[in-house]
Length: 378
Figure (cartoon, helix red, strand yellow):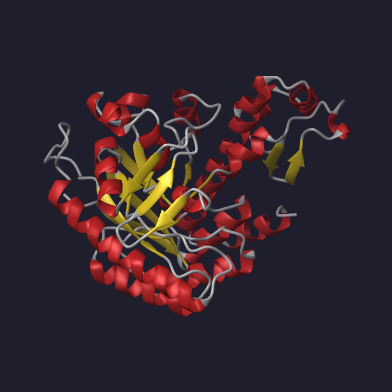
């Protein structure tokens, strides 16, 4: 079975959709918390369920190094290993390998890299990435791609895009030959779905060409990768728009590694269905909270005696119980609870934001929530 995706309603370019996986239905547009090592940092799985997370991410590179994909496979796959019964997506590891610029060498065959953990040498090919992802068993897996650095010349970016396209074909061929090589495969449930990835750097012509040729290769969903690598946000939007011009309207469209709350609203309005980012969890660990009134740096002295909730408009457990003064005390005292509570609130804010976006699309009008996103982005 392919990955069923239906569009329920639209508001302009924005789409309200339903993505059916073997581990449940995902309502889109959706924000996906990042659980790189099979764990969304500081938050247990039951809390993620309470917050309404429909799908979370794992990462092939990190899970391959520790604890190892064969161990996860032998223990029943990533869902069972991490006790998560809802949908999962795994990134191919391409971005992580890209970020190891001093520790890797890219060739047509694949990428030779050294582990950031112990310096040991490893080799990822497109086939190896898919092999690992099949073993992990996520509902949605990603083609192995090369993330072009920024800035990069047009010629170099084209060469990188061409290799990503060749790698995508190799990923698809390996996946089709081996997608049922797991003991938990069931013909009655949707298969794992392999998404292709659009690259092309910061050049709109290459983005459109990459999208066209990736669609020609044929995938059940398409990701737009290689963004949030240092480019201005206006350029990010331009590259997303260029790819969306070409990507099919009846398939899920995923922008990888973005962004601030106001940005995920804007991208959903453009017609993006899926987004992920480490920002809500990473910012929480540094004391930055996202609220309906804008960003709040909880470590500031002005909150030392503030008896108000982090966000008076938020209904999460943190805002219902704790004060800004207490959260500041925890943070400046280096109490681990600070990171836990901050993360819970930030995830609640992102997930609630996407629920509001979905509701607005169902009503056919995103203008109110778009206007609100502009006013709280400062």
